[in-house]
Image (cartoon, rainbow, N blue to C red; front, side):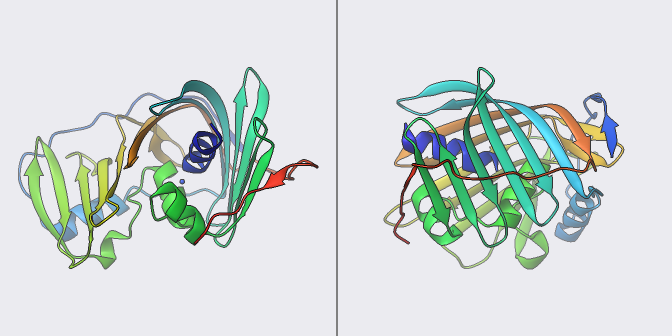
Length: 259
């Protein structure tokens, strides 16, 4: 239970003008192959121009032992801070704060907290993380900087596919729809003695004045065990004067992760 809560909180945190919910953005099939650069440029034209973002989301979590549904408040100060509060029946059960240099979370069921770096956390969760990757995941952007890799382009089931060509143990696959190059799926797989896979899917997007964001995110992480997380964005607001309150309650026990 302790690890499942940590994974849930940290994958959520791995999404002043109030904005009403918008309609789902229409998408299109990819009917002909495009050059790698055209696909990458098209994806990065979908910019999000904001200073702060607040999301109220519904979350479903499942592993081989646990299945639960919770609500989550996600606050983002772009490129600086992500704060996630996980609630069950209106009660805050866990919080996480992430900055480019720090990862910290606490959970009330076991009365524990973690405060450390990405290296230790990545090893524990089975997925290499940093602040930019978590922020990109929540915004519907490719978690890796596509301009820095070498890729081959093709068509797959009506979507543009980029497959990494780097000489690396990590395989990266990205699929984009044809109308706006929205990211539909990314799969990061690492072979070796401890193989692991991260599969992120974006079934739909919604348009807001500040940019187009995912309406849903589906995450499957596999390293020995399989963890599934479904996130649905219920309400979204931009550029409010947000605060990021975070303090570990007194008496909680610190846990350490070997890096």
